[in-house]
Image 1 (tube, rainbow, N blue to C red):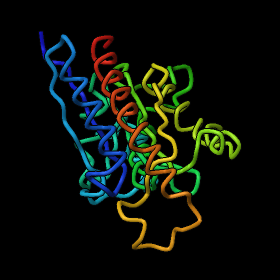
Image 2: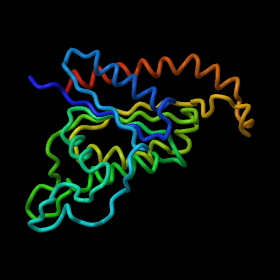
Image 3: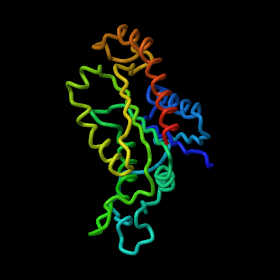
Image 4: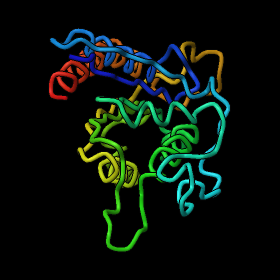
Length: 222
């Protein structure tokens, strides 16, 4: 039996902080599953690409790129690999109530080729059903996040991912994270820094364990 393919897509510019740590824990859980797995970790900020360019190569009649992104850059092959994976975990911090521009651009390129507009035919032509997860750390508390409506703002991303790949995405929010390693270096004294540090020391290991469990569970179910 072929190994299950797991892709870890880091949409954060930081390779060793909250988002990356959650994704690494997810990957560890995937390896701990009872299945043979191949895990590929990708940092989007290492790659040169844009969001959708509206070239419409993926929609061209009799085009060689019909149903796949035809724009050539660093993610062209990666998009196809992710679309054929068994499990994909996306990670992003929250920037101004949204996922990062890099992850959003990647998702535009990932989704759009599989949305078909041929009358009388199925609208979604993705090559397979893919189980997906979103791991999203943020500076806000859970109460502040709900009050600000972040879950509603993020719902289109989750809905489109489900629509294209056939499974409802699993979501893990991680609240009230530390923005800085050393708050004394920055003008950030509106925060209750000591309170945030205490919470991080207590809660973040729990968040990591939940991410690890999620990775294991999703691979076992795929």
